[in-house]
Image 1 (cartoon, rainbow, N blue to C red):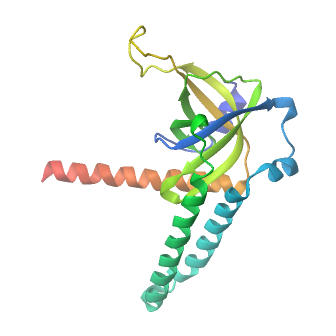
Image 2: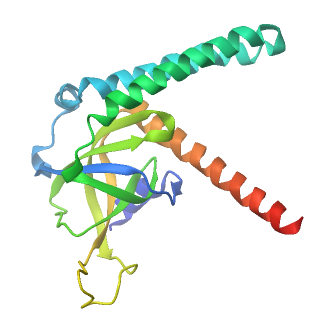
Image 3: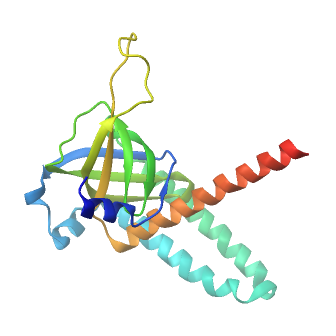
Length: 207
């Protein structure tokens, strides 16, 4: 990993958490689509998910500043938002391809790390779909491998059925700004949940 790639990847917080991600091989890096071409490649469900999240954020933000006066209205809008989330979750699941599915080791606004027995080249770009089930959202982007290493968390070599895997560090190569915000928001949400679980566990052990 060169210094520039490392700096771009580390610019955003990385959270150790497993999410589903689809990885398929694209073309060589020199044939990376332009921004306009990339935008036309993004399937409609991902654009809808992004727009829905943007509408939800803009709709609820001013209501939080009004306090308890409009609490019934806020509760109603949250309920409607939950219905939309359930619908989008169902639509996005249809985009999840079993043959391309992997789990991340970590993810953040700069990219993600995943483990796979498949071989991916640093000379090619990857077509990536990241699914944030807790957020009822997903993004479509292009990534490129900037580092690879052996996955140490495997059984002893020679174990029956053992298949050696490689850890791949993927930098976001083409991603819309609003989709990067989705990734950052999801990582912060999961971090809050992890911290809450740690606090509850500590309080339980001390009680």
